[in-house]
Structures are given as C-alpha cells and as structure tokens.
Amino acid sequence: MTAHLTETHREVQALARDFARTRVAPHADQWNNDHAIPREVLREMAELGFLAVAVPEEYGGAGLDATSLALIVEEVARADAGASVTIAAQNGLVCSPILRAGSDAQKEAWLPPLAGGEAFGAYALTEPDVGSDTANLRTAATADGDGWRLSGSKMWITNGGFADVFVVFARTGGPGARGVSAFLTRRGEGFTVGREIPKMGLHSSSTVELTFDGLAVPADGLLGAEGEGLRLALATLDGGRITVAAQACGIAGHALDVAVQYARERTAFGGPIARFQGVQFPIADLAAKLDAARLLTLHAAALRDAGEPHGAAGAKAKLFASAVAVEAADVAVQTLGGYGYSAEFPAERLYRDAKITELYEGTSQIQRLVIARDLWGADAR
Ligand SMILES: Cc1cc2nc3c(=O)[nH]c(=O)nc-3n(C[C@H](O)[C@H](O)[C@H](O)COP(=O)(O)OP(=O)(O)OC[C@H]3O[C@@H](n4cnc5c(N)ncnc54)[C@H](O)[C@@H]3O)c2cc1C
Image (tube, helix red, strand yellow):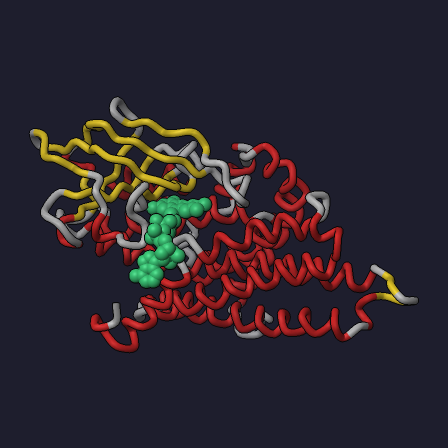
C-alpha cells in the first residue's frame, strides 16, 4: 500500500523496514524483558537520522518531514512498539516544540545533541491529578530573580528515565490555559526522577514520574512566550497524534502478519484453519481497516507537511488507527487460540501493547472532542 508515496518516502520506508527487521525485531523480547533498549541501538537510530527526522540539517536533523516520521514509526512499531514510542517522543514531543517555539540559542543548544543521540528528551505535561484536563495543570513556576523555580509532579513521562532535557509545562500565571508556560529544563538539585512505572505493555519504553521541588530554571529556559505554554503543548500533540496513529498501524500490521501466517500453518479438522470463513473474515476485515488507518495517518501527515491545519485529521487518524490496533491484537490472539494467550507467542505482547494507543496523547474520547470541536467549534465540550 505504497502507490502514492514519493521516491524519497519509499527509500525512508525501506531503510526503516530493514532496520526494524534486522536490529529491532530479533531483540524485542529481550528488551521488553529488560525494560530497556540498549544505548548503542539508540545511537544507531541517531546515525540513521531517526531521532530528529523533521529537524533541518543545519541542526543535525535528517531534514525530512512528518510523512517520513510516520513511515519510520510504523516500521519500528511493527517490530517493537516500545522502541517506536522512544523515537516518536524524541521527534514529536521534544524536537518539535523546540523547533516551533525555541530561540536560536535553544535550538542550537539542544537540537544537534538530540539529533545525534548524545541527548534524549521527554515531554512533561500530564500530572498525577490532571491528564485530559490540561488547562488545569498545577505544577508551579514561580519567578526567582531572572529565572524560575519549578514545584510539582509530572506523571507517565516517556523516556524520562534516561532523558537529559525535559519540556515541562507549568503555571506561571492565573488559572486556565493562559496561565501556563513551557520550560526546557535539565536534571539538577530539586528534581527527582522516579522509578519506572510498572505497565501493562510497552515494556521496552521508559515511563516515570518526575518531582520538582524548587528546581531552578534560568531565564533562558523559558520555551516560547510566557503564557503560551498550553498552546505549544496542544500544537505539539497535533503532530504527536500522527505518530501514535503510525505506531498503531505498525502494531496492527504485526498482528495481521501473525494471524495470516498462523492460520496458514495451523491445521484442524483435516486442513489449515485459514480455509474456515470464521477465521478468514475477521482477518480480511482487519486487512481492509489497516489500509484505511494507514491512509488516514498518511493524509494527516501530508497536511502537516503542506503546512495546512491537521489537528482534526490527526485526531481522526489516531482515533481510527488505535481502534484498529486493539482489534487487530484481539484477532491475532483469537486466531492463535490458546497459543495466543501464551507469553511465548507474539500475539500476547501485541495485545498488551496495542491498548496504549487509545490512551496517550489524548484518549479516544479526547480525539472525539477534538473532532467535535472541528465540527461545531468551541461550543462542543
Ligand atoms: C505509557 C504512557 C506513556 C505516557 N507518556 C506521556 C508523556 O510522555 N508525557 C505526558 O505528558 N503524558 C504522558 N502520558 C499520559 C497520557 O497522555 C494520559 O494518561 C492521558 O492523556 C489521559 O490522562 P489521564 O490518564 O489523567 O486520564 P483522565 O484525564 O483522568 O481521564 C480518565 C477517563 O476520563 C475520560 N475523560 C476525561 N475527560 C473527558 C471529557 N472531557 N470527555 C469525555 N471523556 C473524558 C478519559 O477519556 C478517560 O477515559 C503517558 C501515559 C502512559 C500510560
């Protein structure tokens, strides 16, 4: 399903597919057991340009686009969902807001090491008591001389366990969206990175809680204008959701492969189970839905690449593709029967990994809210 891709996009896809098949898939079980991806593999990703795909070459990036990023994330997710979110967060949640709102000095300081894999980043919006309701976040940034001091907690922060730079959203003003600003922070006194949070799936990906207890942030740590933080956070998610949709397509693609192959090989009642319509039809439905999910994802990416509004398109892609991933994993488990429930067969991990795509970067309900606002404007709540 690549007829409409450009030559460059096909080359990027082929490169990512080869990397995923040779360097990710054979080790995915091990990384999920270890709850970590080896640093040298992350460096290989950097060498291929996967950590800063849409960052201009002048900052060390690959100088490509959102479509390329979606293709890379899909291929890597097909091999290991956790590895794909490590890439997606570095690109979509860290490089992207720095590129969008950063000063020249911030771009020069952070984008080259992020692109080169010498530094990793994390995006810290969610808090223990505030997730979807982002405008009510509570982490406080109080003025201190020329700079700021951060106090509060952030929850579920991807790549946080090994990140060097953190995009943190904190309250600098009154209540509501306009009181939020964005900061670029490093580790330091008054900043604690918590233990890895035990999760249902995505075991190769780092997810931690962050605690700020008066962390000093210099004046040049403010990212974008004061009071513009939430706007930046949400604009960042407009792009991030396209990569989650791509991740969902990768998980669904893997599930489809697993189901097709197993149905061909497993015999029952005198022949392969693939000859039963009861086995064929859920898989055939899935093949059609996966193509649709990919088209929605690449459409949203193409809008972003064309500089057109893509918030609703990204929400539609994520809403649909994540549901396809969850269904695909379920179909894979069902097709494998009892072996589908075994941790020694791939369907079980896919079943656990798929669900996250309906939750992070906005739950499916929040994607519906974004789409409703596109239909009815701010009246939709
Ligand atoms: C593995 C993992 C990695 C993550 N990585 C990051 C990260 O790197 N950075 C980061 O900042 N966050 C991250 N998150 C957080 C994630 O984005 C949030 O969990 C998500 O946005 C939902 O917020 P919540 O969990 O607080 O749920 P809540 O907002 O409390 O929602 C609970 C339920 O209520 C529903 N709900 C809430 N409001 C509405 C509404 N208006 N209409 C209808 N239904 C509604 C939700 O859909 C959900 O079903 C991660 C989460 C996980 C699990």
